[in-house]
Image (cartoon, rainbow, N blue to C red):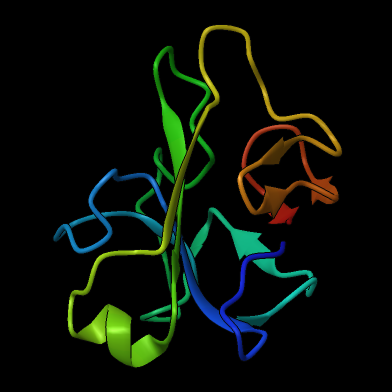
Amino acid sequence: MTGSNSNGLAFIELSNNANPFAAGSQIYYEGAVKAGQNIFADAALNPLTNTANPSGSNHFSTAAGAELFGFVFTSQAAFQAKGAPVETMAYATGSGHGMSLNDTIGSLKLVGYVGATGGHLVS
């Protein structure tokens, strides 16, 4: 994944909600990322609480219209202050349009995965 500010570092959130601050969102990844660094996003585990996401929803949805949202902030402080992201990306995974290797949406690029539904994405 790429996406950085002038310091070469950004704060990234991947979730199932178009609002990065929504309560009850399923978080797939959240943390600081250097420009060009690969990250490991896990649909089965909430990285904020280190607990399993609820059974039945612990996968990257393939339901029609489902989307994976990525948000890039200049820093964790900007995210915590609920500032506007510098980049917002939405990737529709439903309607027969699954994620494929090397798909690039904004600053997100899928470079690997584990499993058919659920499991892990390295992007």
